[in-house]
Image 1 (cartoon, rainbow, N blue to C red):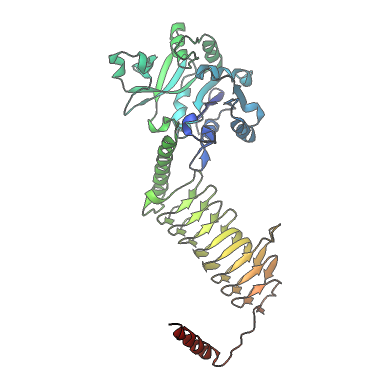
Image 2 (image 1 turned 60 degrees about the vertical axis):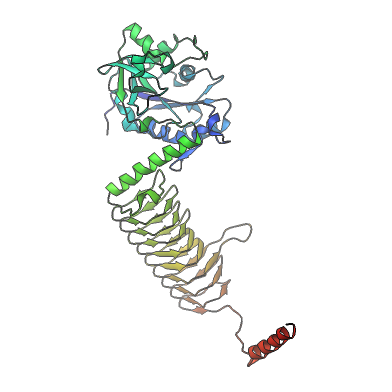
Length: 450
């Protein structure tokens, strides 16, 4: 764990309009790895040990404000109104930071791949202004960092740069850190005499140099500082996130025969020795223990899978599914809010919703837990070693006792005692020769019409 010598705070800018997303969902709430981009930024700030986190939101986006309040509380919100640039946005956080004394890092709610490890170097020095730069594959319209060693001489916008400066590939990410007092002193001097009439955060670098304060740059990978401004860029960020997560799992001993087809969530946990076959999708909240096997085309969310269990192919585990060791959930089986004990099986075409299945129990093909009465959900309990025959409907609330059996095709509406056999279906009858006589009659009628 990193030793923190000075208190830290983070100001996360999330007040942009996000018009290029063409979406009713605010830009910073779009997910990467199943988690809002803004939450990724907050995660990084928390991992840095920031004792204060302030998110700057716009008056136009009550959804973003509500999101921040739910996670961090009302005192973590600052409002930029009207939007007058990045420098103006940071100044909106000054009153919320109050009497905080220490270093402040400014990050962005639409930069989801930036981690605490990427940001940490900006805190190496407790004085002056430190920015995060990156070496751009195509510098294009990025602001250029003019460097002398690790000393930052200037940030020059591309439209104002000379040919010599445009040839530089060191570019500005927009992330910077400084002591809180220095930062807001410098921002108070920033003007808006530019084409947009906005207050630019980058101006504090030149103002710091004029004061004789140190100005430095540290570097991160270009992908880490990627900002998302459109649906296309969101897809690129998702692809980069997935690539990194897959690589981390394989490095930890997880077998992925076709890694590019597996989709992971931000918090997916998979133990080494597990095999994940092609075309598996993980939603948030999944924990897979070592030695499990997740077969192709399965979808898993909010579920726990123990060692030695096998899921799929074509299975769906929904929130609350909890599979014990050596459980088997097979093709076209859906499990929701059900604990399955060790060695229990549901191998084909079943719906298990709200309940428990005891160790060693067997659930036949076509079985459903009828858990909803149109108003409320009810639980179904299947005891250890019980056997439920194919095409059975268990109408909750109901309990099938340990070692009991349910005959195929039964509709069970009452409890079955341990060791009993329950049959709930119509009596089979046979009418001798009826089918042959019927078919003969119908063939004759059909022949008469032709």
